[in-house]
Amino acid sequence: MDISSLCIVVIVTFLASIAFLSVIKKKVSGSGTNASGRDIPGLKVSHAQHGNLDLITKHGGFNGFLLWLHQQYGPIAKFWFGEQMVVSIASPQLFKETSRMFDRPGK
Image (tube, rainbow, N blue to C red; front, top):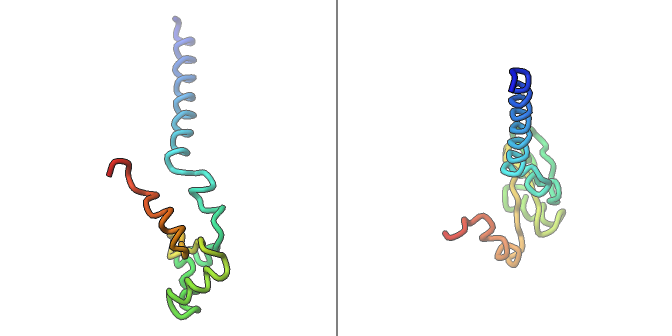
């Protein structure tokens, strides 16, 4: 194998590795719509750093805010607490169904 053939093999292998790692990263980081929260009803972020904290204050605190949120969006709704998206569940049955969602297998 001459040097040019070896260079081509190395370049193709490198590009294939980058493509493979890119696919793996997307799967691990959860870049699908479910992981991003786009399909969960609720609020959009109203402030980049504070999220929806202004609405929590407007509704007299966290309890009043959650009551309002679920009246507007139903039993599952998202909001932003600072930069963190939060999913709130206001149904005992849905909470029971999802309470072990993030448990590790065998633990």
